[in-house]
Image (cartoon, one colour):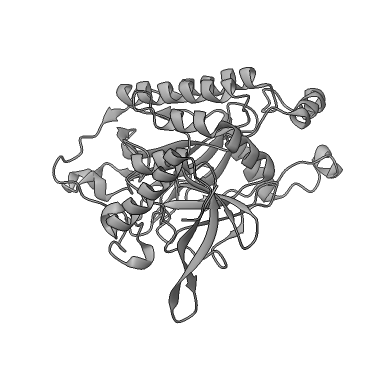
Length: 398
């Protein structure tokens, strides 16, 4: 490990100040390749406040997570099992996500580090579903029960799917779908008593997610199918399972294009994933599709094997707690959810423009890349790190 100082932010009611956060980087001889691919230095947390921006993520482990101000980067605390898996497979992971001949939907981990002040482990990764702030509201979006919603500023749909009965809808018509689980200790739910409206919405969302079909062009389907299959093979080959495909969709009436508007101004661009969003026409609307693989670090271990035996008796099939090769087959079957019957939308070709939000140029919401601040400082630090690796002295402070 090498110790470095990250530039971060401390936010107050009236002003924000820059502070320094000492961290120990794990396996950065590999992660620097991911940053280089994205033209990033390691100082990408300049707008992030560790004291105020980290919140419980809502997962089973209760790990903390938070976004940078521009929503481009997600900072996530790692539970110990995920930390161990990532350290074990870092080299193979980086080879997978930097393979230009076979693009990947796996998340891009830019930094893996331990906070010296707390001892907690974190990763900094891309956000697959960008901020919608600053983009036009949308009319005719359908809610969970296919009622039209106008002036929608959230996601048309947001899904977490695995190719099994654990599939779920997380947002519909700009409204979050609460997770209300039927547990063994909630015995009244098994006889149909005391079922809340949120529970009914959750079940409806799960059914829709399991039966999901997405309409893309033929070219898009070929790319998406290839990435899903290669990523499923990577996970199975490294004894990993229980990953999800996170999906976000946005849409406008086709009349928005009749006004001569550049389609790129309707939807936020994906910072990290090439070609996203996938933009196409279907059923009288112009659509934007975002997707990526998340939570892929779960190892097929003893606890999962025990859970598999228990769930065989009572869990609905197909289930997610299965050995990696079976999980891989289920995950590859997601390719059948993408139908190649949509029409292509031609984007304007010209000078590259960033359509991120109405806050472009505001340093409080800016993602700092090589070209955006001190390129020479970043290049010099990376050169020093490379010299450490070459000389066998990596682990000394930088």
